[in-house]
Length: 181
Image 1 (cartoon, one colour):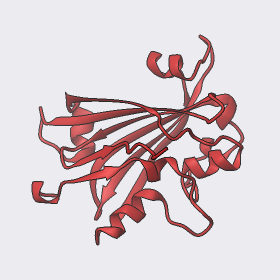
Image 2: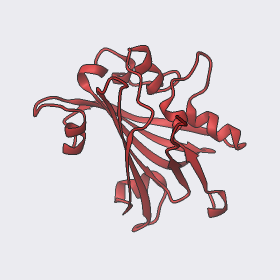
Image 3: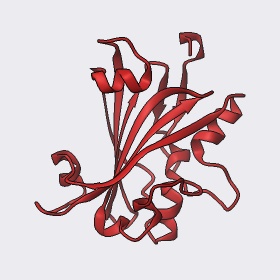
């Protein structure tokens, strides 16, 4: 993907449950630009989460989280690594904890389970140097800068739902659009 292909994406579709038969937000966004968006599920596992995830999800010292690790592709080329963490007590026994694609994405499944995400999650963005594993997965040269977006999402009733850590190549960025009141 050349720098001429860079685009600014909108976060809101990724926070909105999909209707039956609708494609996931990434596939739909890429298709609207004449491209093919897909993802490869790398792992689904129950883990001791990093401290910042544990803190946001309000997990106790022995509580665990389910992480879904994905490689995001544009026209078959990797452009982003995305790790999404969910409280294990929410994810266990659902498709969140199973290896396989979730129709409509995790946000749709969470809504089906009664957890509607808030419209304005907390987001933290910073630049970093890609790790060797990120360079390998994203096809980057050593010491390549990446953009890391961490999105903290709670439900409309205030229950912490998800922490997503997205490591992006310089060509893909998202913005959170505020809803009109």
